[in-house]
Amino acid sequence: MSDTSRTAVRVTIFGEEYALRSETGEDYTRACAEHVDERVNSVHVSGHVAEPHKAAILAAMQITDELFQARAARDDQVELVHGRLSDLRERVEDALNRGAAQADLGS
Image 1 (cartoon, rainbow, N blue to C red):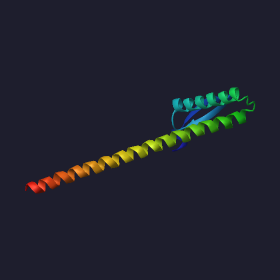
Image 2 (image 1 turned 90 degrees about the horizontal axis):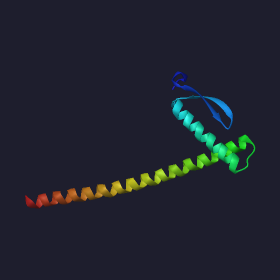
Image 3 (image 1 turned 180 degrees about the horizontal axis):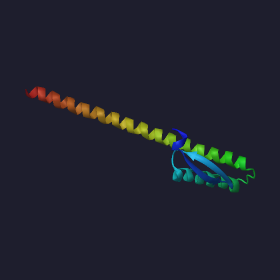
Image 4 (image 1 turned 135 degrees about the vertical axis):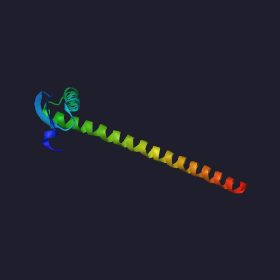
């Protein structure tokens, strides 16, 4: 996309203001920034991390871990659904074959 389709959004993360350009819209960008800000602040408070860049890196690691876990859970669900669809397809094919065989016997 071109820069003309991007929205300029000002956000504050860990006390620092950032001017972001986003293709996803202002509300979504603000929600993402708020999530990052909450996580950085949480790491800073709970881990007693004084340096902002270290708190940001630890928060990024936590967010990435959550992303990877969500992807793995989604992949597990996709595999489960594919297995169930395969089983269902086999059952339908078996039923159709039985119906066709019975129709052949009746003619």
